[in-house]
Image (tube, rainbow, N blue to C red; front, side, top):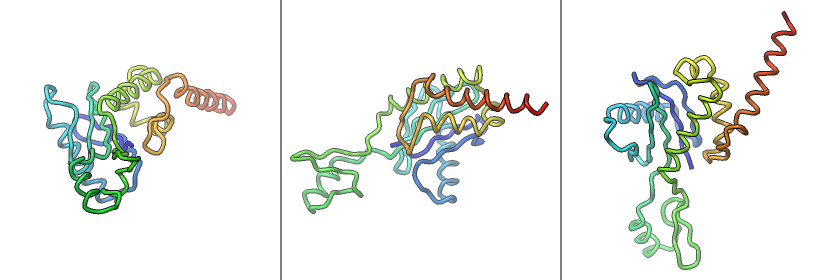
Length: 184
């Protein structure tokens, strides 16, 4: 499950943030600034995956924007095995599920899959706004949130087909242009 999505410029200013699990506002601000600082300080030769404060952070830079996706970090299976052998509970807060003789981690997210999701998001935004830039996000923030909501629901990726994602946005644009022309 995706915990948060951030779009940040090279100066570290957040242009869009979307959270899919509750977090106190002070905690959000602190986490955001630390993660942004960590991602911006890394060189292009370093890996795009970072584990930080219980989150697995996947980021990718496109021109002057950084797209950052955070998800819960994987659970250490050794700890899970110890906790389930010493107590009959489920282990770490319901993340571990017993299925017959097997244990598996419920919140696993594929890093490469999330990297591809970021690429799909950028391609969809490019198709919508031409070549997406920081100003497009700033001046059309509501539509960018709407586009993101078409792709991600409750922290789960639900749609990656660009045509399906852009169809409702195109309909909204057409209707708003009709209404503009009606009042001229």
